[in-house]
Length: 444
Image (tube, helix red, strand yellow):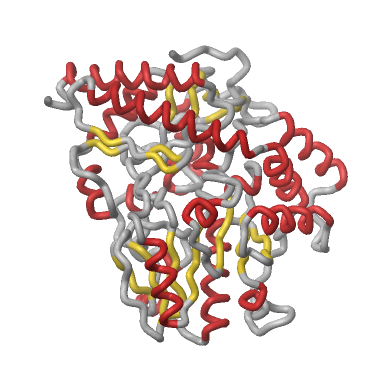
């Protein structure tokens, strides 16, 4: 299913010869970038082999520097909803760039994007824009502590809220993929007030707790849906203790629906964290919530938070383009396509005799090898322990389908993935699963 694309190879610097292969690009990267990647989730450490280096993308596809085309189910880990290089986004960026790239002053674009977010998410009265999901979560916690006057934070094992010190304990995504308990360089004092508890179990919340932060649909330990009553129980526990409830919707926001998981679940938190889709593929994040809670932020309140590139005019232009392009009917389409993909993958892989689960939350699709139902990080780790994902990943890549190089990530079918593309993915999965059985990498 790979397709050669002439011109996909990226040339080297001026006056030097091109470096045409993925291996050569990766070797160059390793000399100047630790591990050869700028984010550990891009590493192939968990799956083996050499990372492909992307030269360009269009719609549902990416091409590597060797000219091979892949159906891209990563979509920048959920940042893209419309596909690569969507005309509405590229046009908005071109217009914005022509006016200037950053000012260090207020702009209309940041106001318009903030209005778009608040207008879509019921209960979110104000937002402040930042440059990443990590900043959004870190800042939301600071606001919660400043508002409540408390220090303790409750988070859930396997949920990933960025790489700030306080929240790396029990992290999912790349932390889980690399088998790390947290991170070296984080002092014990940084996580002394972080309590890590199992997902899908309502914890005891006492009056020392400033906030409970949760992925309302977990997508960093694979895709794990909230159990019935879980989010409602968190809301009640926080109310009883006077703590704040924080929804980290960096992945789910504006992807699972116009109003995100709070709309889908009917549970309204006090604070939200946003990112990915709201930036249209550019570095951006936001945290928002109740007006009275956010009143503690400087310059009006005592909680300090700042960012030179916050509200960047390119990011706000791209984000607005996406939010204004997507319709309510498009969300129905996304969910239908995700369901089609999940059913097809389940049939293709289980048809080869390999036990598999393909959970779906709206347009988020997960993949676990094993018969045990995954409900939390412990059961996600058990599913990943067999090592089957690495074999499946490599077989799919050989067949022209790019998945995330780790067993704790989601698949992100978007509006650019038409039924024909998803059917190609399913056909590749059937062939990959059969190959795993025939080659002995999975014994039925």
